[in-house]
Length: 485
Image 1 (cartoon, rainbow, N blue to C red):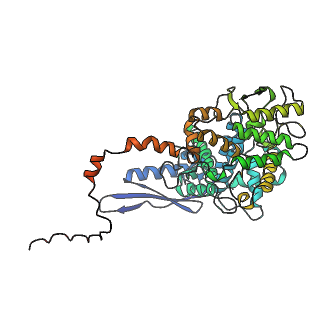
Image 2: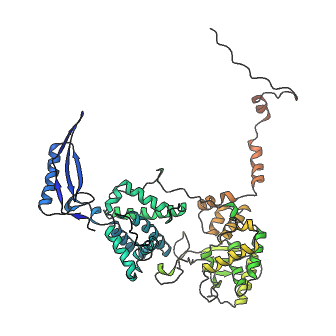
Image 3: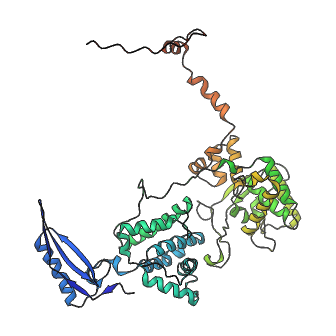
């Protein structure tokens, strides 16, 4: 469907004489849709009308959305949102991580479906439409590999995508925001997902402004009622595990056939050293200093997040990245509890691992798959925990082992700056995440402030009325004095 038309008709200029001023409105229609533009003087109105007449006499097409001739259209009217989104993906692709690529595709997919001229026809499956956009159109590596049925869907979207001027319409902006806030079935999306997708879309809009396609950012921010929802960053205290629960879970996993001992060491590393799962998966033997007695050390310098082979440049499921929040090549030393030292030494001996080998390889070699250790952890919880604890947030995610470790460090008096250095977080993020979980220090803290906050006895006795003798009935409230007449 073309967004331009040569069918233009002009009407007489309307004059409205109000009490304070007179307004002159130029009237015309494009393809049957009436348009109007008001001016404070007759000269300005006639000048604008003459410009439209000249463009129509010269055979210029008029834009259906703005009603203006092509020569007067803004850059936003010259291209569609879908065309811009494809260009934006191609520009950003080499400079962002595989996980960011996937999240960008998800956000652009929702925005694209919200910026269509008409509803998607019934002949297209809604799930397949989203898949066509997310996995092919906004995936630079797979766009040219789209099968014929996907190309048909994308061709229809390309023809029905609104121009970039749609961002100047507040109703369209609200439609996009509602799309980001909901899932395909209409249920509300998680607050963290909404905030992430709004942030991605905000970056795309800023790119459009730099390219002079848009003049301002229409997305709400700050205290606007439509701004991104707040996300609870603090860890749920109910998700933490106690030592008895961890011991039972690790013992059950260790008894699993074939790779149970290896998964036992993997989970123990998360519990004792507080590593992220993607950091533990990337560990090699050479990164571990494990003395025969006492504490050891892990030198963490690489992470292997699992994002899917369709989003990585080399086609691997994992993407090798530097540490989260740190410069490329940076390292992070982490202390190793003596109990973990013994576990890792036994693992290296049993598997006869060499310095360049992965510390926790998969059953067939290579990196340990997230689906494997998540499935094993879920089975352990179901087998070990009572039903009410299994249904609760207690240790529901593998990541909760890291949360338990960092909380234990903080609760036992390790300075937050040191915990943040070991965990790979900033101090503000650490405190915001674990402040609700810090316990066991209340009595000591109360003692520290009990004396300094106590007021002198003389001041207290002078400020408070004397207490009545025991058994004295309460005095009725005194009535206010009567005003003289």
